[in-house]
Amino acid sequence: MSLTDLLRPGRIGLAGRLPARLEDLHGPEQGVIVLPRHLAWPGMREFDVADDRLRRSMYGIVLTQGRRNDLARFVNPRLLTQDWPLLRSSLDPKLRRWCERRLPLRGLAGQPGPPDPTAPDPAAGGANTGAGWPE
Image (cartoon, rainbow, N blue to C red; front, top):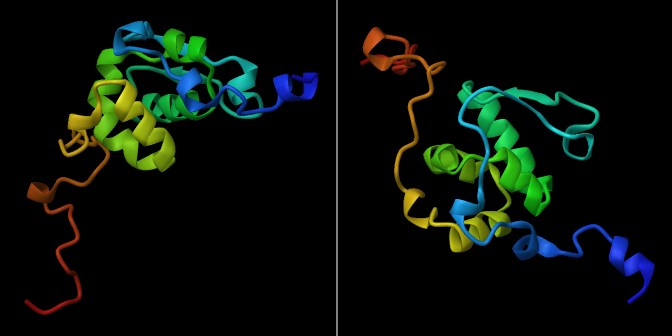
């Protein structure tokens, strides 16, 4: 095997980047995570785990670009399980299938995720009920 083959991106593949079990993930449940430059070098690197949107964004970055040790270090198993119904739709289908095969996330696909606090409340009249259309 040549040095070029060893350094080629994607050489390890998805199976090699994902942890073997959900229990191998040890990310924090609270606090601010600063991603290393190899994950988010030109953009935002700090993510508050308590902020649902920021956390899902960070998990998407780590799942798509991270190495196995990045996933173990930054992704929390409980929060990943909680976020999976919303997070899975933003991932590449191949990555999504690997995650659902390797980790016990498959059954969570059809479950609704946690409510989005920034979404309009339909009970408060914030939802678009067909404005402009006669009832």
